[in-house]
Image 1 (tube, one colour):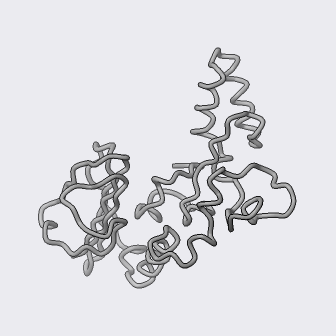
Image 2 (image 1 turned 180 degrees about the horizontal axis):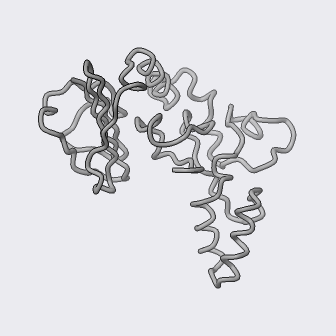
Length: 205
């Protein structure tokens, strides 16, 4: 997804569909800047000027920039709830998201249901199960824009990953033979016949 950090992408699709940016393991969000002066990326500033010259309104232009700017993935790491998110005692070169007091490393250190804890589980599984990093991959349901689905397999183990990309419930399509598969991991504590908002689940057989 390029230079894009968004809470909905902090999921089991990590590791196969996009690069890692600092902070995504905490669920850091895009900063949602409201003025072009808050951006530092020269490409974003130039694009702002071009869009305005093309007749786009200020609001339209900022909305476009917010979706494309590389600065979304360049805001300071949010270490704690102190000033400047504990990143520096000086003035950071770019602003910090307003939600840093709730989303930061210190707040997630001892939280078993935090995104940080979920990432630790993912890293441990990657080390334990070679199929995650070395297995073959097959993407499923390519025409379903609501869903990211794929298989990882290596001849011994087969995994099915289903990720709901929407903030609403969607159908949970299961290929033939996966109905009774073991749930290896998920970001909801229980199982359901559908995929709940932003739900991701890994099945194993």
